[in-house]
Length: 316
Image (cartoon, rainbow, N blue to C red; front, side, top):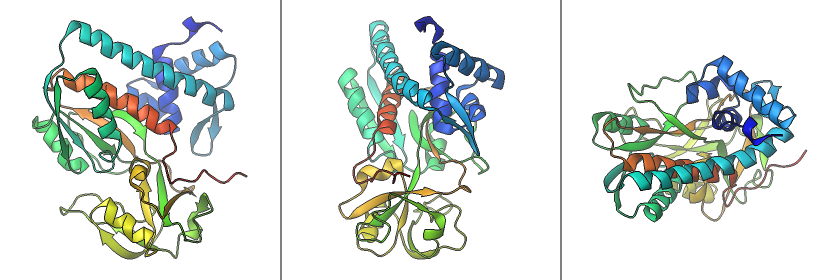
């Protein structure tokens, strides 16, 4: 095995294809053609002498060798991002004001951790944090009133318009279900959708008409809605009190209070989880690039860490 056989493009495609469970989606996210993706993955497989992916009913999934390589690739790509940041600091002084937007789930842990990382490497940058929904933040970035934002990329097939802004994938944000620690499903780790069908749901309530909000599990028909609340603490408080269960993305997991447990859901009808992406204003200052690098590094760490309060999937 030769280190020269590994390319940055190949490792980035490995990470993206593993997250999106699709070669074509990974190529779209990184701007590569289907043939270029195939060549890069084939080159990686020749380098390690093993298959990295296998075909699954709904896309591709990593083999054991692929999972091992992904672990090291994530570390290597993070180190390269750190090196790029150091080189940038040699050539330009990153300073001044930076306006950063975040959807509520990203504002719980991902964005604050990235701001802390940025502050450690670029103490001259003054970050202003703005929260909002994806449509509102896209509009503000396009208008130049904020420099960049972390927003949600909806699953394929759902209408979404970024205009001339190109989203950059940060991570796939897996959907789970939050239940009270005393709930009958709390000790299961992983359940099927048939076990959710008769449950009362605690759902989101948009603050502005037309804004997206978290509802019940996506493939459930006619779910029973027990309560609707604007913010995560209220929703999770209702869950902890045993008044219903709630859909929750992985990015919101750090906000889970005592008395709430997260469970995974097996659902062949649910094809792809929403993704967290960054969008950057064309007129953003140099500090925006440094913030995006910090977000990438924290997203890589976030994806590899199972949040507190979440039980591992049941074996077998």
